Each structure stands twice: as structure tokens, then as C-alpha cells.
Amino acid sequence: MSQRIYAYALSAAIVVAVLWPITRHPDDDSFPLSTYPMFSRGRPSSEMILAQALAVRDDGTRRPVPPHLVFNSEVLQSMTAIERAIYAGPGATDELCRAIAARAATSDEEAVRGASQIELVSSRFDSLAYFEGHTEPASRHVYGRCDVRRP
Image (cartoon, rainbow, N blue to C red):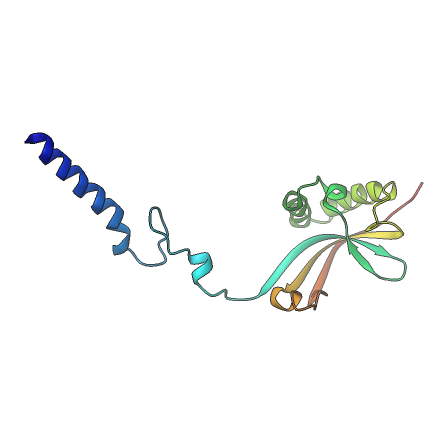
């Protein structure tokens, strides 16, 4: 009999624990029930600001520098390296820019081939318009610029 009472009590406790999230506000997201707020709520803006290293050619065209020439082959880590340099100030952006330019000077990557300068920038995009073909940024702020000196 005591085992049956224990089993009922344990079952009731588990049911209460599983249903407890129902009593919370919908924005309180947690296990085991999720409202998936990142998908269920509208975004406040379609704007995205992206830290980039750009290879600039003499004709003014710009191409993103491949991540492995910035920091390593991981896209987000390379972007974070650029963001940290931007937040650290001009000395850090100059140092990172020169390092990228040195790697670009000896690279045969299409994106940096023919580049005369490297720019460290933050570019503001409308992410919805971007996927409709408007791939140019709405605005761009240059934090660092350096020359690519080929051997």
C-alpha cells in the first residue's frame, strides 16, 4: 500500500512539474515547455549591422575578405575579431588592418586579388531587402583603412 501511495505522489509531482510552466508569462521560456519566442514574436527591425573587412580595388569595388585572411576560417570568430578591434579603437583597427593586408598581399583568393586597400567597416543592411536582391548596405562606417603592399 505504501508503495502505491509513493507512486501516486511521485506521479502527481511529475505532472505538476511538467505543467508548472503553463502558469508563467508566455515570454518566460524554459524547459520542458517552450514558446519559442525567437520564432513566435515579430522582430522590432529588419536592420542588421555587420562588422566586415573589405578588399577595395582601384575601381572602387569592394568585396568581403574571406574569414581565414581575417582571423581564422570561422566566420563568427573572424567577425568578432573585427568588432573587438573596432571597439578597442584606432590602434587596434590599424594593427588588424595591416595584418589582414599582409595576408591579402600574398593570397591568390579571388576576393582580394587586385585589391589595393583593406577597410574595416560596420555596414548596416536591411536584411529583408538583402534577400530581395538589394545587397548594398544602407550605410557603411569605415573604422580603419590600410594599403595592400604586394611583394
